[in-house]
Amino acid sequence: MNGADTAWITVATALVLFMTLPGLALFYGGLVRARNVLSVFMHVYAIAALMSVLWLAFGYSIAFGDGNAIWGGLGKMFLIGIGPDTLSGTIPEVLFFAFQMTFAIITPALIVGAYVERIGFGFVLAFSGLWMLLCYAPVTHWIWGGGFLSDGGIFGDTGVRDFAGGIVVHETAGLAAILISVVLGPRKNQKHPPHNPGFVMIGASMLWVGWFGFNGGSQLAADGGAAMALTVTHISAASASLSWALWEKIKFGRASLVGIVTGTIAGLASITPASGFVGPIEALVIGGVAGILCQEAVNFIRNKLKIDDTLDVFAVHGVGGIFGTIMIAVFGAGAWAAQLGSLAIVGVFTLVVTFILIKGIALVTHLRVDEETEANGLDLAVHGEQAYNIES
Image (cartoon, rainbow, N blue to C red; front, side):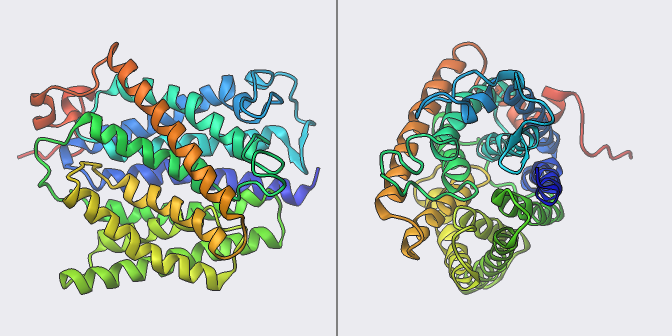
């Protein structure tokens, strides 16, 4: 065991959890109507708790067990046989479990942005839990757990390069998000602006800080590789923030706060798969392009396709993660066949599993709330609480 590596991954684990709680909750919560903000907080918080238990029970074993090239098996469920002295590389395996658990938390939580303001709470829990176990965990095994997309798999000695989750996290969450948006249908009234852009900025700032653990921690060591991953993560976020704001100014005559911080997230998602393989100049390019590319994806999905992916999960996370994965090959840090082939395989698998889960779970619990609840807001009707109690 290496003490420095252990200390850094302990910090990184806390940072990645911080991305979801409270970062993502505030980022998403500020974007919805005031009458729905607590429902968003509830979704994100409950998912964090449920994924933690399920990751302990089955998820970690499916993803990192000693099974075969497709399935990790159940040999490590409930951390059977893993103690404080059991190592994974140079860190305790229980710490590696905890670090990866925070990824299993944020990935289904990202999907929340697609269905806010109209989803049934029971459906959220059932779908998120099953999706993490049957979609996210297997994909994690394929790419990070020694599965068939990694080195020595179907693409030969050079498997797919996905440093911190362009495919594992962002492509899977993005595709699941847009599919569930289509099946669920649009909100009855989509004309409400974000109720609290300040929440959005604070949440994005927390995500930015937490992303240092997300990408820097994925080096699994306290070394120069972690330092470079952290640095390029920051550069891409900054570059995308500026390019988004500039493109918004050119197109609409003003740059908005919600816009610039959405650009930040686009830059962060785009650098995620490449952060262990590129330098600052490449990160500057990735972020600069991502700010414009993801903004155009938002406009296309929202205005051309008329899909109510409410908080633009696919346009920002999905498109960003896919773009960053391809840029690894563009910059010569990965093989074209492995990058594109893995994107295609995981994409098809994600869509099929997600569709089956949506239809299956909808048979046993309400997919969507009734029209009255949607109109009045989910906070009071579903959870019996209000975010803002203004006394006359």
